[in-house]
Length: 177
Image 1: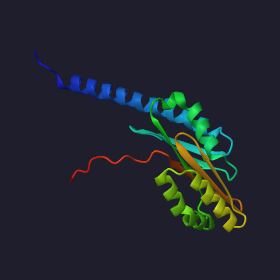
Image 2: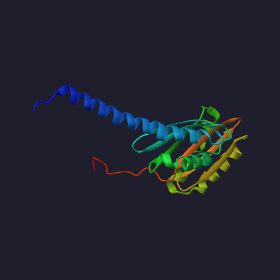
Image 3: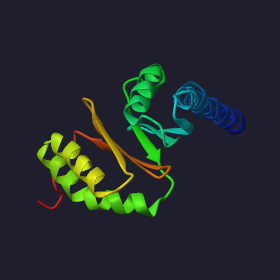
Image 4: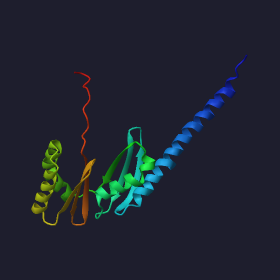
């Protein structure tokens, strides 16, 4: 029996193209686009784009200065549950640069990091209240759910949104230990 290489190679190439093309089409039209639409329909979201990888789904959103960060996360998670499936959802709030807000956030970062490390979440609310009293015109709000702590800072028409996961990264075995 003589094998003909050209028909076998052609069949392999066409099969691979159909398999991978189908996977990429499903990923784009079945997961990413529905998530983009679900996120873009949430009040306060100006634009959204999603990216799926083996670990989970990351959605980058541009929020208006009046958005409710925790509500955006909950709504995207609920409306995109079918597309997300069992993957983890990571929401990244893209903020336009505002030096005044960055300076205010940096001044509270130590207190927030310490509170997160000790799992004393009321200390975050206290740090934001202290920040509000020290900075005229600043509006700070915090919310918490079973997965994240949400911090929103607003100052003179600009906003900074921070999502802090309540469950930190677990450290694995060190390779040189």
